[in-house]
Length: 185
Image 1 (cartoon, rainbow, N blue to C red):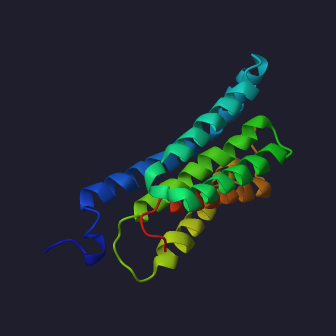
Image 2: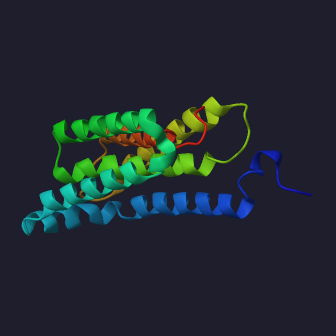
Image 3: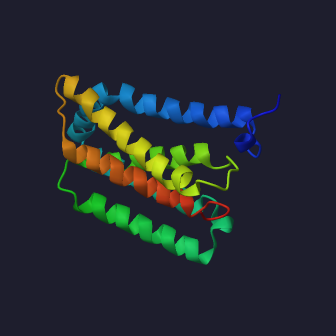
C-alpha cells in the first residue's frame, strides 16, 4: 500500500520532518513565554534591547529577501518587498514595548512554516483551503493559545491585541511564503 495520493510529490519522511519542525517551533514559542519578560528586562537594563530587536528584524528581512530569490521573479519580489514594508511599518508604528514587536518575527515565521508543511501536497483541488484558509486559521489558533497560556503565567497578561499582532504577522508570513511558491494558487 503506497502513500496517500495527496502526498506523492512530498515524501512522507519529508512531510513528517516539516510538520515536526513546525510543531517544535510552536512548542519553543510556548515554552519560552515565562522567560521572555525577564530576558527582555535584562537586555533593557544593559541597554541592548533596541539593538537586539533591530538586529533580529534585519536578519529576518535579509533571509526573507534571499529565500527562493531566483524563483520569485520581479513581480513576486515586488510583492515580497511590499509585504516587508507593510510588516516593518506596522511593527514600527505599534505603540508597544520593543520586545512586543518580536511577535511579528516569531509569528511571521510560524505562518511561513505552516505553509511549508502544505507546500508539496500535490492536490490541485482545494488550493485556497490548503494555501490560505487553513494556514490562517492555524496561526490565529496558535496566537490565541499563546495568549491563553500567558493568562495563567505570573507577571504576564492576556491581551487581545497580541492575538491580532500574532495573526497579522502569521498571515504576512503566509503571504511571504506565497511569493516563493512554484505555482501560485
